[in-house]
Length: 438
RNA sequence: GGAGAGGUGCCAGAGUGGUCGAAUGGGUCUCACUGCUAAUGAGUUGACCUGGGAAACCGGGUCCGAGGGUUCAAAUCCCUCCCUCUCCGCCA
Image (cartoon, rainbow, N blue to C red; front, top):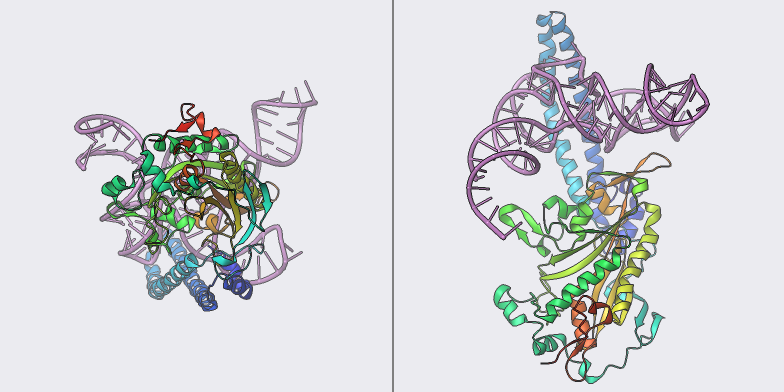
């Protein structure tokens, strides 16, 4: 949520900044207008309330001094004001609600550093890495020389080895739900252990609830705009989380932290549920797009001053996992048009899938500024000035497993059809070196 | 799911229609005292919206789980909902 005061005081630069992500200026003009009217109405309301309050005090005086009789005319006057008051109360209330509803639908202002663009085609590739070539800047990606036997898509590899069973998953739950079996399932678990252990030096491990209230979904910006994307349990008015970002952000909802407590680093493993409405048929083969997948998330609360460094830390942690897994990836600096609703700046990590020839998004590392903190009302008290300010939130996937799983089984496929298990996972897989060919 | 109790400030806890943003105790911070620590004494200590001011600050409004209602006036009375605890039932 934007700070209404910024919109009020600097409408033009808010318009300009949001135009880069396609928000029409009229939306902001309307908001500005609503704000003016809301303030006028609430001022009027407060004046009337002040009058009623002071009359009530007078009445109390009279009652105490036993002059109940003479209070009657005051009562009459107050009743009359009360009628006018209730009209202004409902008018001000409506306008305040209108203002909040509008504010909840307006996306965050992009960072000045985010590349300006009109579509995802304008995302900037800032660097790439492969086990053979190491780290390079964004120009001229040189893919490893994949063998033919690595060019088999993971859904074929998976069913051939009996480690991925999409047919039966569909029988159970429908399409776009995965089911891992045998060592395929073990590898998912190994990835989870691997990642959580990797973050355990600095991050508190959380196992949060995966069904959450409406207010929790609003705090991160997933509602009200993206209602269609979320699974909802109507009977109990709960939503299935699309990412652990949702419960982890609300962990400190309505709290005032001490500056010394910051930064707070949290990590969580959860299933993530997405309806993927509107993306039917697009890149849905195999594990490319799923209604349910597992993910380890890393998330931080920081002061505004700590945010930039934390953003870099989260990104490097996600990259580090990919490097340890030996997977070729590239880093994208998302342009203003492709930025998520709540984000000021986002880096996506995409792994190259040799079996499909696609770059698959496996992590998204974002800085939200105070946008989510404002919605969730998470603040901190500055130890220097003693003032209360909103914190900044940041998070990233580290990492999203289904797609990683896909890239691993393709990349590590050997000529005999078996899969070599990445070194770092073996300790979590009973020291096995291979998933054997059938 | 059934029965009961309860949700008040940083914490504990009082308050059943006006003098209550709220007693008291603890904690916090400041000062005094003290060789130091402790103890003691005095003071201090909420958030949000809004108007004025460069600021310190000053004025108005809101907030006692949430939302409605009654009343000139609600922490206090009424209704609905949420949550917590205890017991019973059920259950991994």
